[in-house]
Length: 219
Image 1: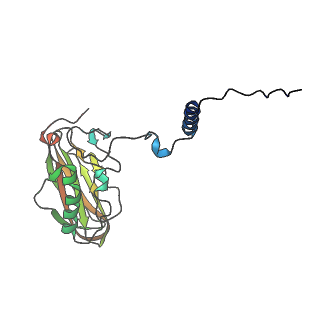
Image 2 (image 1 turned 135 degrees about the vertical axis):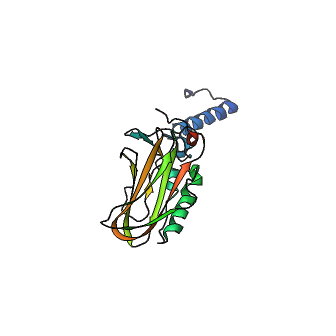
Image 3 (image 1 turned 45 degrees about the horizontal axis):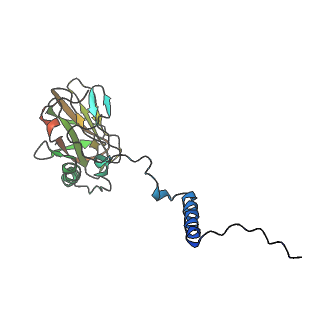
């Protein structure tokens, strides 16, 4: 008796087999998790280090005075790695060159203001006019004998507009961006020492551009 033939699946043509194998390989590749660098950039944001020019994004407002904060941007990064030399005029000039032009600012005074401070004694003060919408930033530096140089910026009513929050000899006011006046005023800058005595130098910078020509700050 002749044996029954085994049941076999119909054999696909060679070209069909090759096509099927390719489709299976493609499906397997698609099922693998993508590499992190192949996917979208979650949380990508605009570069926060763009200078404070034109119409910047307002940050916080304290007692009517606007301040701008660009964390890790040019306002902060410009003085990263700065080392105090002990020569007040040289140090304040370097700070101004590092953080002024890169953020669209120019010196308000032609030369740094100079003075001497001593712990326990009153501050050295000077005034400057502030127009509506004008934005300022102050750089100061002292001799190495001054362990903590303090700077406070006040309005004509005595309101503290900005101050430094560091315990060193080269304060920047404000450390994270300029201070913009909401109206015509005369600001006072008080420079004092919390520790030690010695000479200091301070130079005020002003934002150049539309905001510095009397445009009102945003609400």
